[in-house]
Length: 70
Image (tube, rainbow, N blue to C red; front, side, top):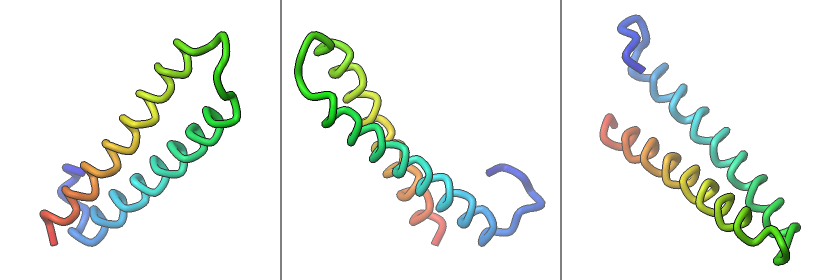
């Protein structure tokens, strides 16, 4: 995003696309977690849940950054 040759609109569109991809991946991972349910892999589920939550947080941070530039 520090490429000086990009216009503000191009930077906005790139961030928007990146957040959509990140949210899609997080949603997919969340669905996989829900399908796995409880069981012997509980520690792995907790780690994966934290990872999914972090994806959503990164997406939110990117969107806030976009709002700052509007």
